[in-house]
Length: 291
Image (cartoon, rainbow, N blue to C red):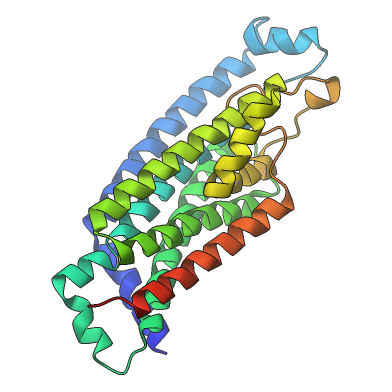
């Protein structure tokens, strides 16, 4: 019961933070601009003039309009997924570190509450908030694309679950840093690792398109260090429309967000195990922390 009580308190505390309110405000601005831009892009595609994508599709005997709409959808998901990732990092960075500095945790751990209950409770509360944020923003993005272009992925819910897993993974790993180091150090360190592994993921995409094995390996190594990008690729592959190009021997999508070859199921299981190990490490580290 203590765990769920702390989870509820953490959820309410996170909701009241200015960082979350700022993220929500900026997300609303993004969604408005995204809806406007998507409407313009779809109108251009529907004109069906013999140029650009329409002409390229005609040359290979394929209609690539739906694939382009899928890229618009993935662009929106990529934005909200990264906002959720940054939110997870900077919310988790101060979850325990700031309360240690302020002495708040002294009044909690002095009561008959296990330290593991504090960590797991804070993890559950933060993960629940991130799940709500990812679900609402992803559904809003999907609704905009459906309104503007009539496209709705039949596997949307699976994609959302994978994006929730990505945000929760980042929250879990940063939570360990929040116990071991000051909040600002934990946040900056995790942010750098997140950006670097995102870049290695892009390198892997280029390597797949160009069939350069060394570039593909860089992306795999990055996913082993932090499998957040692997969760993104699995989500993107799940919700994107069917891509006819690989069947023609063209390992490309029509934009930078489409995924040709998603990570394996084993990488997904590795990501889940990584998350649970990070939570276990956070519990262990806090149990030995001198408050």
